[in-house]
Length: 395
Ligand SMILES: *Cc1c(COP(=O)(O)O)cnc(C)c1O
Image (cartoon, rainbow, N blue to C red; front, side):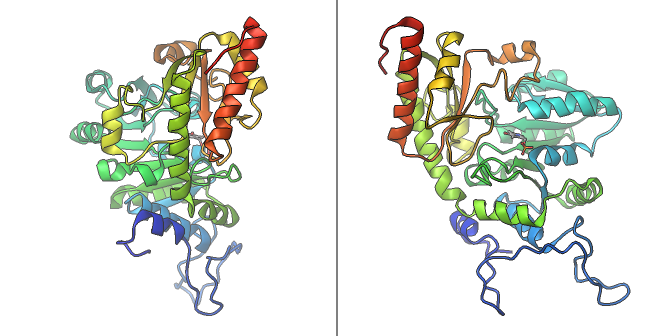
């Protein structure tokens, strides 16, 4: 465990730094061994078999627990594996409450797989306590929130929801992928479990698939440890190393992502082709105040609507620096069309209820120079307008 009084930036940079006494190695090695020799019958070094625990993954898991102010960390083979490991806690007859605007893969997991096991779910705006009370049932076991939501950047007041949930003995689970522990720590606000698609900001370089779970409390930590080992969707030693390598620069990257995204949001607001910009750092955003209270910074993800859906195709064709690709949170700028990509599995009626329509584009703003990013957007908008209207559009 790292020194607790260190600032987050220092803890991040020092993940796995062991100052190893024999060789002096700075970084923790990758232990590929699947099996560990027992000193004698009934004794163990603490490592027995790779799935249960292994030295490289353990360093990552302890760092995750510390960064999120939790008791135990669990590294999984993907964000979805992390969510499935948590949801494996629930069974026949259990009911879940879930954020209305949600990562499409989570929705698919609940509706296509959990439903088969007799688990039901209600989707609501998790910032509306009255709505929560309305869908709550005697058998409601957990509330799963994404905040900010992906792609519409809706914010949930985590503390308020946790207080409500605790009163009804409902577990609070938070998907903290978009803000990372550098900007938001849900366990400090009362949540029981936090999870990440570490494929996104934590890894940060669009080169490793991983998930993390961090739990608070002895009972829930033991239960997730059992499920993590039993299901076996765990992270390999080499991917654990790769993820730690990425996490060391999280602080620097998040600061740049936030700076760039804020500038992009301001540019989009002033552009005549754009009708709506969804970014909680903008003072006009309905959740500006809650966001500022519970988080120390903003994500690099934002969404915007073009004035007509016909603009989407030429804009995606004309962006050059920004790639038209389906992920988020990496150093490279990526643009996504949620209605046909990440959120295609969500039924049109739910999509329309939250405003996720065919004019919406999601932008994961990278850490390139802001001038180059804005120039790329500006040029793509200009080309799209020329094609569709034969006129010149100015930002
Ligand atoms: C990507 C993502 C997931 C799923 O994670 P994978 O690592 O792709 O399995 C879950 N939640 C959010 C918010 C995501 O962006």
